[in-house]
Length: 241
Image: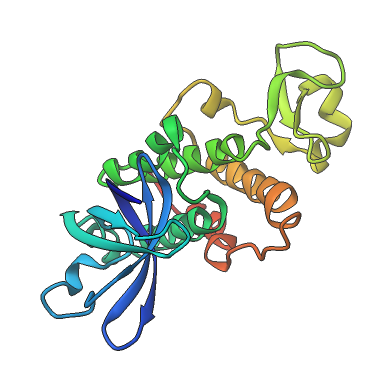
């Protein structure tokens, strides 16, 4: 097996004195994990930072063996996160979720765009919005997306205001009013491709995506929800943009 691709570094584990087990999220091959020899030398140290975009060649003599990686830095994106506590929290949350949820060696197709957007728009005032889109579309990519097309109680397609935590389906304002304290807010800004929502809309969305990721992915797979993600909504509530 041998292939080339580009991708973002999402996890690193030291191996021996100066080598790494590296995990990347790549455009064509999904999650790629492999061994990088002499990665911790002074010359290469700046390359191996969470979030950096790298070009790599992966190869293995036998398909069942761990891949060996040759890695070159393409864009030192990590530098844009390290000096900002909120952005760094978002990066570590992204890396943890991607590492836990995304499949090995599988084409991510259009979902990779939401990954790319996190890094391409990190300089924008609304940088966190692109992360919110990533989590929303992660649910869909995992096959546990929400059904937001019509009210599950009445079948109407207008005035949708809530999402049921039991079914993951939309609920209209009239039907949901008696139970609104137990429902999530309808993510209207996502469906309208609005990249400038209010902060409370983002907080509501991330509370909802965290719930459904836990319910439909982490719990069924006996995985622990990443701590780096758990407090992100609270951090976001203090942002202004």
